[in-house]
Length: 300
Image (cartoon, rainbow, N blue to C red; front, side, top):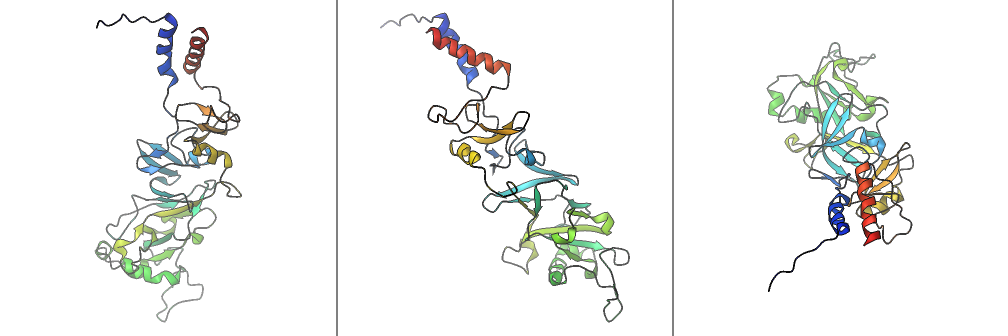
């Protein structure tokens, strides 16, 4: 059987030429590396909630929290309990001790410390550090007692059983357990001002309080969607249609970024949901492609 000669009209050729440009990649992704991304976080500009985009970014499949004290890898996000977990490369752990500048949150950041987060200051000056105050109180030997969380004193004892800390030959009196409330309204832990060399942070004993090698080191931060902490219904509808919540325009209005690259005002059920309307495409090339597509269908 001989193959028939193929024939394409100019319009059908135009159709095949313009079709690829209609299928564009979804600008906002639902994951960053191995970490699932959902509202209020996003993978780029215009994705997620604009209040969070400034602080949590995805670059080369690595999710990072940025504050005025540095950049910190995000290790996990608990969406059910609204907790984001980060690590600090300069933080001391049971396996390694190193100098650090401390950690702080920006005053306008949409985060606060989770109650489970415990900070332990290490190698603090017992003679000049502001955390050591007598206030008329001293032990039997007249030694100043640190105004830290005294109920957390055993934590220092466990940490000082770590080989990395034993090698420093530090007296346990140079250790102070800080809790987030002690950081004040600015959420600042400036080790230079506190005259401490380093700090350690963890958010779980992992069921082994006496074994600091297995503690979960890092920092747990809470976040809220808004003042009422209500999950936006528009975002739920968007994600239910395989879209990713985002924002755009002069007023950072809500948009739903869909798998086909289009943006909508509600969800991605374009052909089924009469309440969903398409937004104008962002670039002139996409607009030309869309016009060409509809012209092809008009003349076929």
